[in-house]
Length: 190
Image 1 (cartoon, rainbow, N blue to C red):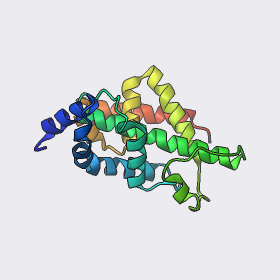
Image 2: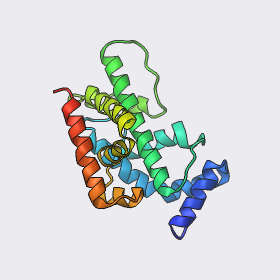
Image 3: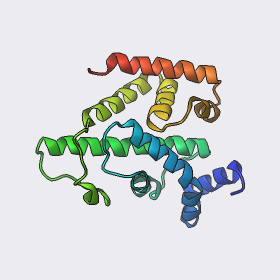
């Protein structure tokens, strides 16, 4: 694990079904996953029912551990992980909305039952769901812009980091971010 190529190779082996390397991969990617999770939770503007570590664990349990991700390289892995984190948070928001509407029994994650008592006065799950749905629509029309918005807004990547990951110039990334941000603002309900 001396460099990005060795991590890339480990991720490829893991996505190819090598479960013996899972702990090494998790140890190697944990710092960046934690950074992404912190960014995700800060951007949600509500008290999510999980900590950054629990969000990572939820993504690992739901997705990574099962395999099936075709990982091209480490940047691709982090983009996929950010999307998975977004989906976990959207699922929590949907569950919270369903619970507030009295829909009955909710499916719970392994960690969720420990956090049901958290303060939820500032919760805006509708916005989390709305933004996620809008990004999905943007992806249908402009996948490159949607990826930049998702990486910046949800995953907390700086525009410079996005340029490095996507191999776009900083100017192209900034243009896509501004375009996507404006697109979202025009469509978000007040």
